Length: 247
Image 1 (cartoon, rainbow, N blue to C red):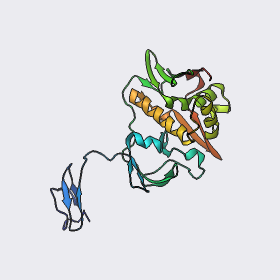
Image 2: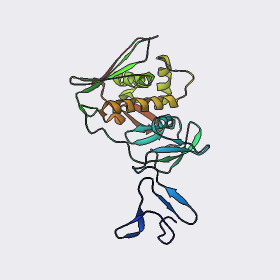
Image 3: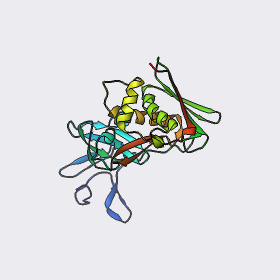
Image 4: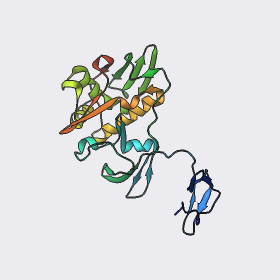
């Protein structure tokens, strides 16, 4: 309807050779006999999820509670405990996350870090986790003489993966979400949280690393399916280490 040149009115300019297409700028309003639209933001669309129960828009940091970014794309945070998922979310897809019906809007893809002195792809880049009984665990990303520190409860989710990858138990360090959750509780995770908390904290950790300037942060974890989902930390054992003071 808005593309109908006979009915659409407003401060619009036709694109060359595209009579049905119009340029609409921020805060400009167009209208037809039945509807009017005002463009409130001129930038590219952002990613969000629409909660179909209450029609709330979930975006920004709140999106981490329902969607986790992985190397191959966005996934619901509880996907590993639900066998019906076979791949990452696509634009417009309906899905459930933590029991809530939603629709995903892809918007712009997650931007890769193109500048900065640290990259997970670099062989000299290593991760170290320090977890004492008091306080939240701390993760340090090291590359040459650069050290970037992140500390928070979300770092705890990486501990089971680092342990398994270092010990190569199971082979390759591949863990189910059930295995991770059990160990996560042992190192201080809350019994009030479900399996989805693991994916939420993995996502928070990757975002924290990206904000610090770590290139390839969202490729820290990789997942494969063999009857059920298995996830591991993508870095080789030689580039990860940890120190844990058990409770």
